[in-house]
Amino acid sequence: MSFKEGDYIKIEYSAWRGSDKQLVFTTNEKLAKDNGIYNEKSSYKPQLVILGKKGTIRGLENILMGMSVGEEKKAELEPKDAFGERNPELARVMHLSDFRKRDMDPYPGMQVDIDGTVATVKSINSGRVLVDANHPLAGERMIYEVKVVEKIEDKKKMVEALANDYSLFPDTVDVTPEKARFVFGSKQKKDPDYFINKTAAVDSIFDNIKDLRKVEVVEEYEREEKGKQ
Image (tube, rainbow, N blue to C red; front, side, top):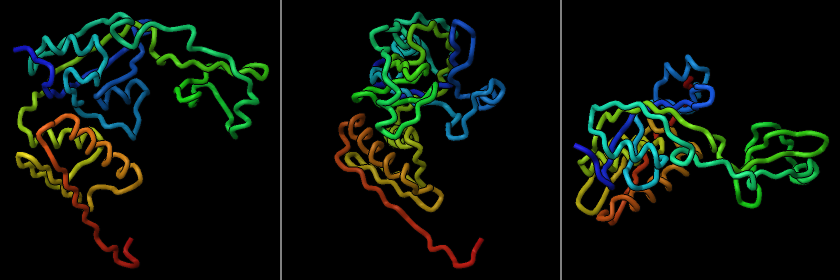
């Protein structure tokens, strides 16, 4: 049975550049380590996709629409169905002094904000800095291997999946027809990222689950014993 727009599914996937077969994304931790792209800040687990919400590239979403739970597929996507064709007008040369004025020391690969647009520093030569606002994978054919591991149909699981998508892992989740309630205990690290992600997760819940009228977040803290290591 194929899916439809608005369906919540979880997928495992890996993606390679078509030009050199270099792995660039994966939900498989071992594969990431074996290919030298492991990032300890990344979460290697099935990824939530809400079909029709433009949360993934068009070509992959079109493939997912025709799949079913447990099915695996491998496909090669043209640039227009992946990260788009490269637009040469999005590349520009800037003076190194422009960066110095902002107390920035640019280097190749560095991402910078240029007039509200994220760009990547490509090269630095003779006081000139080439920056490119194209997606780093623009113009590339992409090879995807994807498996649909789950379809989420229960509202409580949908709410929890949306929280997890922002690296939030509540101790308990309770959902009534119009309200969701989270309890975050001491297991959840409450650093600055937590507070940013909490706001984003609540916005996402309201955006995606229209009949919910209220989200309650309860935070529990434990006193640290003095001298405890």
